[in-house]
Image (tube, rainbow, N blue to C red; front, side, top):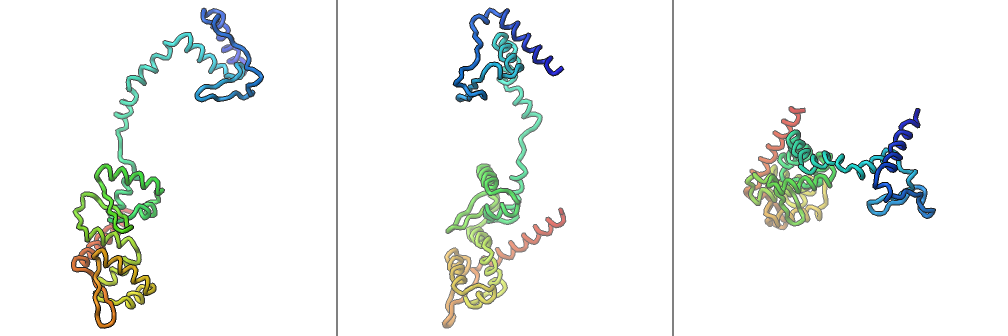
Length: 256
């Protein structure tokens, strides 16, 4: 029973070869001994012994040679773009789900870096980078870069440079801790900061130089020591950011 389709297609092939006037110009012969039994590929063409070609494939090839009009309906549909149009109408383009997650992450944590977005959303870094580039091209987000710090913000937000730099520094966990420490205790020395957050004095000095350079904190001498305090506009930025993140966390728990 399994040989019936093969015999049927072979019979049709023999009829086409015998009756067609083009058959006299076609010679079917075994492949040469130099051709491997499995056939070889040369660019987009495949060469293999005739007897190894599946009957259905061989029959289809000959039918299209002798009756090319059989391929006309398919060519007409594709060349007219009808399928593409129907596909567009049936499934209009939508914003990918990953892009929504990334945009929401930037909205909830302005100044966030691409690596942190990947860590929070669970999306691979390459995918995050691609969607960030698309969001930037669409004018939905913007990138702020300052002395090695790179973060992303919603483009529609009217942020001052001081706020953007402050939020960039807050992406560093140590500097975030220092800023909120200075918010609670306005004037502290290097030693007091080091003891409060548990890092070395040289490390405190390095972070404070960065914050001082960007105008987030200011240093001043008091006796023999150097003390630090927040610049005048920074406390309001920190309080608002802390409040916004608390609201975001509460809404996240409610939706969950």
